[in-house]
Amino acid sequence: MINKKMYYSISEVCELTGLEQHVLRYWEAEIPQLHPKKNSAGNRAYREKDIELIRKIKHLLYDEKLSIHGVKLQLAEERKAGKQVTPLKQEEKPPKPETSTPSTEPEQVQLDLSPEFSKDKPAPPAQSALLADIRKGLEDVLALLKSD
Image (cartoon, rainbow, N blue to C red):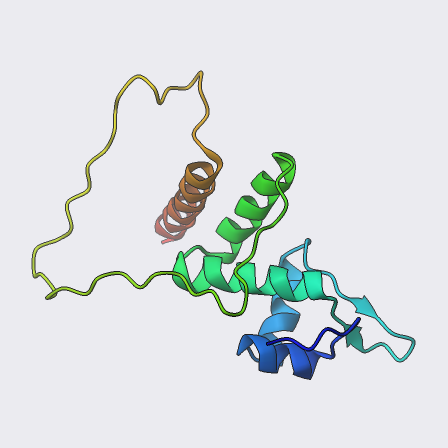
């Protein structure tokens, strides 16, 4: 459990979240919502809300399997919608998926082509972020193919 302090050092945050310092620094550079204050010596001073955001980012990256780009989109969508970031608490853990015997068959994906999803009606934020992430990945692949 977190000792209620006003500010935490980067090493304390690493201990609380199970992340390395270089990972936190990278996330700060890539994700605009994560910007801890710095003290007069230039050391990072994380607040409780920063730690909660770090846990949220970790969940989105490691459990939800979003890319950094997808996380940025997800957090921007939540902010735009006026939602507060509701991160996982330290004690909470996402439910583990049921494990089954690995199949040699490729996973079948059912696409919902019902009229409720159309150009006139935007997809829900989570789907928008995922679709934007997929589009970015496909654009990167296309750029690589064109460069050959």
